[in-house]
Image (cartoon, rainbow, N blue to C red; front, side, top):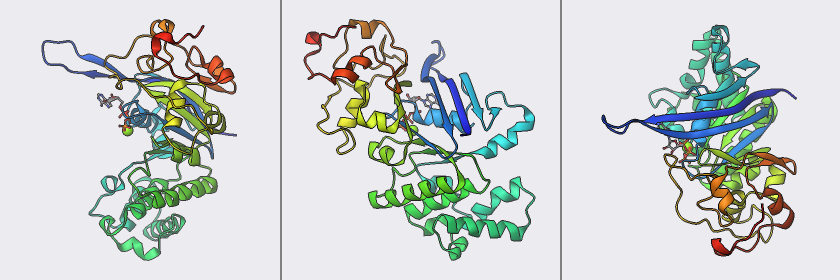
Length: 338
Ligand SMILES: Nc1ncnc2c1ncn2[C@@H]1O[C@H](COP(=O)(O)OP(=O)(O)OP(=O)(O)O)[C@@H](O)[C@H]1O
Ligand SMILES: [Mg+2]
């Protein structure tokens, strides 16, 4: 299988200004994420608000240069791209956002929205561009007469279909979708997810799919990457992760979404509030909210290591996998030998 995109230890650190007399603070939004996505496959990234999902999406779609790490797209270096490859790489990856209304120019008809990328990037004539735009409209399940309408004349689901059609006009290899169905009604979500899945099969597209909704992830993903405060907690094949998570954070997420995790899933209630990435907990970044955290967790950051066909960053992942998650007790009483 062809690997379309490969990320190695991707990092993004923002400098936050704090007034003229203070040093800028460093905010690590993404702290070292690695993955590969093959043609025709979907990697879904999940995690709470602020964990770095959109930052990752911006790096992978070449909008933002990473602070560190490597990114290879369609066989070429996408961080320090040779000038000769830049145009090709920009076309190889396209983005779809949560809010299609914001990403579609309201003053342009659908025909122009779809034809513009071809006019700018190819030498196709007017008639050919129109033909391709109409063919793509049909691909995304919209009628040809819609070509003459403006974005505001469509429903949310239809607008997202237009945004997807536009993203596909230049035959990308990778589609980065940042919460593409989160703003839609549940029934419409299913239709758009089906469409994405059909298009993936037809064009052998790789998807980086960002969502906070595990039901959506369960439907669309092949591989899953669970993030917390910019770090990978657990990562691997969807079946493994949904059937038997081995990181307490994954378990907590699964338990909070009815019907997606294993039966009789132990409910883990997260303690306290989400910390700020400006001042992350020492050791394991999840330790301040993990009901199983012991001194070692607060002292020593667990590295992501292979556990049963997936990767987990938890000192006790092996134990959780073997014996499940124990009943949650007061943190001081928890005895876990590491
Ligand atoms: N341009 C920026 N400058 C400074 N900080 C930023 C910037 N972009 C994002 N951040 C910070 O980086 C962290 C990750 O943000 P990001 O938008 O990637 O999270 P997210 O997982 O997409 O969240 P959400 O689910 O709310 O969309 C947050 O703490 C955010 O405040
Ligand atoms: Mg986001």
